[in-house]
Amino acid sequence: MSNARERLIDALYGAGWSTVKKLPEPVALRLGRTIADLTWRRRGKSVLRLESNLARVVPDASPERLKQLSKAGMRSYLRYWMESFRLPSWSADRVRNGFDIEDVHHLTDGLASDRGVILALPHLGNWDLAGAWVTTELETPFTTVAERLKPETLYDRFVAYRESLGMEVLPHEGGSAFGTLARRLRAGGLVCLVADRDLSESGVEVKFFGDTARMPAGPAILAQQTGALLLPVTLWYDESPVMHGRIHAPIEVPETGTRAEKTSVMTQALADSFATGIADHPEDWHMLQRLWLADLEERRP
Image 1 (cartoon, rainbow, N blue to C red):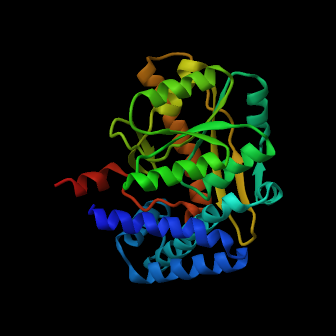
Image 2: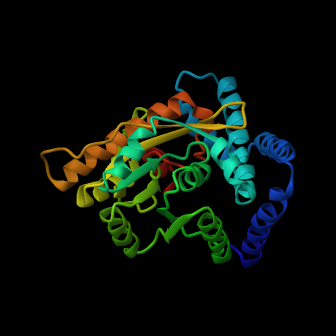
């Protein structure tokens, strides 16, 4: 990526955080929908990749149905961005009232046990809003990791933004992040990880909507090494201003098997939980990148 393009990207994100958060919420949402529809009509690589991914999630969908799903998907994706640009300016009440979560007792009971809790999420809905709700409503800080972005100034913006919401943010690269996450869990803390896309190329192979994908091993390994509770979370939107979510039942560490075998079983269970939420709300799955191994191999030559 050229320096000029990096500076442009950083400037656009900076403008979003500085400008969009000043707009009235209905105006920001209309702006997001307009941008989403324009992007969808251009039929660029990201939109086509989204449709390709959705075709695996909804295999019986007609081409027209896939187009409508990808259009709704782009609207959901831009809603995420409009909300994220505005989140730092939301009041505590707006954050509390902006998220409705089912089965939160799995989380509160886990935190009360002092054994540490790992929340693992796919790219569904707005995970930043869910995190802000945790730090605001439950008054519980947590630790997460962030992918290194280019330019570096953009990565710094994301870190500052998430820290402003009460999160401790660690860089994804480097071995120190895992050790810090483990220490937080052993101290009874909370760790939140977006875990449906492997960035390391050393993740665990899982069956996901009928084909093989690779997902991060970190959540399962952390649960094994620290004794922390591993909880899948799925999120979704409806037509209201409120995002919805569900905390699934804990994924237990198998009693027998090697560490690799246990990690494989637990990561598959995580993928199955993610799949239920994605199948119910495919338009809210913001996966605009290649995920399945067949698609990754197709690109390598």
